[in-house]
Image 1 (cartoon, helix red, strand yellow):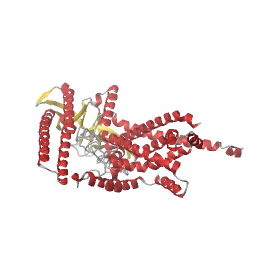
Image 2 (cartoon, one colour):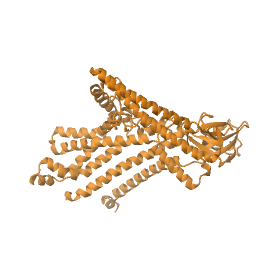
Image 3 (cartoon, rainbow, N blue to C red):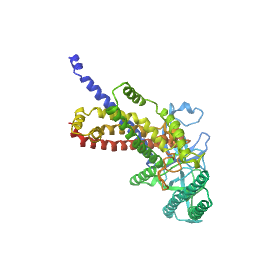
Image 4 (cartoon, helix red, strand yellow):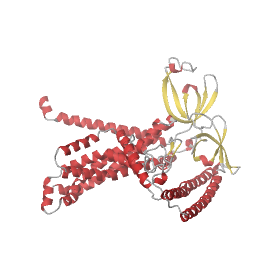
Length: 546
């Protein structure tokens, strides 16, 4: 009986079902871990005030957010005098984010629960989110407007006013003044080019001088407006009382948000949650990437993946069509197929070394010598950038597209080719109108796999274009608008940098989960878009397969 059951193949069905179930549970568990720890980063935390008495009888006050709690053996603290119960083997300790970097050296502090004599959550406690120097926790003592103390009710109005001015300053610096600096640099390179070509005449010099003079005049006017805005921003300040009783003055120009976390209702917390989430998606990073948003990394990741897709799709499809439709069935073709399959197993860092040596130094250096001699010795394309990153990842994912496309071409019956040719169509017309449309779902499958792998690659990008902090995006308002020679930020590298290179490990930990969740979301979104296109193509050409 048991022997017949094994021969029927039922055990393998159940084993396959169990394997799929375990895989699904593992994936869902991993996603739940990342999502729960990542999304909690945006939820407003309550602020706690702890009154402590240490083993020497010294009293102190600690204010901050509770980040973690754990129990440790008492024997680890045998040198610390604690009031413990008889036979107690473990004690609880709390990891508290205290902020206030101008007063204390570390953002985080461990508190032993037996040393806490009083714990409260006063509603007057406030968290000040700043553009630099981290958060500040304390009590607001005074709101100073142009040297005069005003009521606390004006706080929101002043904060909105300052944030509006800060946005104007950012626009002036990055857009208007940035455009003038870019044009001045182009004029400098133009002079250098004329000098190299021997065409730097008096007329050219006068024309460039007049353009430079006009740009400098415009720059001076914008700088004047910028200084006026900075004076307005620097006018007002907050006076706060810290946990040690110290009075600290914080200028409004450094303040992003002021939140009474202990006063927030559940609805207010939801609103604050989405506010933090939007800030994370659309703001620039701050404080060595441990605070702020990740918009440059999102932009760089999506742009690089799209460029890679545009490059690898036609190359992979053309290569697969040649191997399957035109190449002879000989030893050379077999060797090429084996080589393509083996390329898929090459470590990604090897592709990075290849991209650095071939694309950056050889191709990019040659382009600089031919088309950008005026910029040398500073390279234009002879340095890592988004173009070389896209090309490197296109080479890395090319085997995936070739193999998937070939499999799709192999599934098309030969009778369809023969029928098309018998009706008078040429081989090229048969490929374009019959074969490629029917094989398009397989082509999209290869592109989906290529996108999934490329979006998560980090090692080769560290050599050919990605950086910790890019000063400008590859896309801006300056001609030619899309600057493929620029370096860029990437979510995968951002996770590595924040998780392993951050000077503030505890603060960076929730940001790692949040960024990982965002990267997974982007990859899934790109894949779902490609899957949707593939399904539509499959339904469109399903009738032709029968």
